[in-house]
Length: 237
Image 1: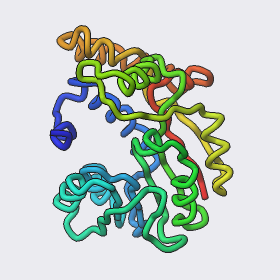
Image 2: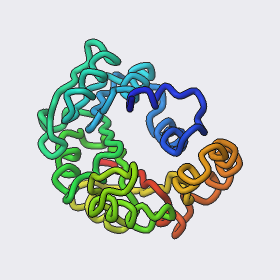
Image 3: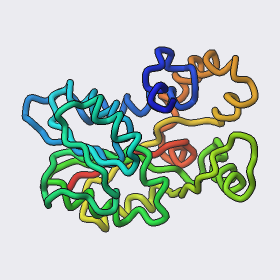
């Protein structure tokens, strides 16, 4: 069911698909087509959907995940690629093995993300680039409170999996502590969109289409990015 969400044709059909559309705008800018044979590791590769896309752009890809089900999808989507079961805090690769490392929606599930950030730095070659997402503490969607309530009490269909939230300042400190330089934090998308999806799902697509130009102008501005619903960190080793 999760894998099917990546095949959704309408990018405004859900907040998940819309968030990936907004994220892909940044990822496509930072991971353009290459003929240099660059090696890319995706930490928490999930279904391997994104890995398959990066393969088409010329990257030699590898991925790790902790879920057998996700790894089966990732292998099917990336035949011949190096896909392993592993912990994001203990990557099974040698030092300086990759030119690019990505980690999408992984850090938000780690009580202490520093070991994972340290590992991503370790496997990157000098000058290599890391791209990782994290969950903003002050997001306008109010998900910090929602997640705390959902973990404490069974409320409807809310996910009962504890997540961890941060600020751009804290992220910069953590990546710099791991040895990264040129650390930039972007705000990916903005607004209380999950509430529209829950309260008025039939109106969501129309709202998102109208909201996107506003997102493009505001979500990554200083101060306002702290209120975004997703951070993207770009850091150079």
